[in-house]
Image (cartoon, rainbow, N blue to C red):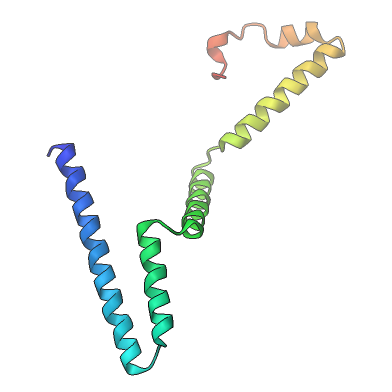
Length: 126
């Protein structure tokens, strides 16, 4: 299947789903108003809030979803035993500080000896 057609099909299904949710929400809110469960102004506000969220006009909802996604990603990385980029950067900084400290204290000979036989290919990329 052509990826352009797949993308178009997914987009149309998403639009159809959004339209269906909108229609159903309006119907249910009118039912609630008719039965006296919800005040008409509250029903209209509910419909407006949900439609704004569906259209992406709710930055708070997007920020909340983004935070949840980051937490899920962090949990997955932790479950897999992988380091986060922040942790890798922190370790690189600590290594740099240790190397500087060793050089400052005159341990250059020790450092060179410890790194003898280690080539650039053996080291991780920067």
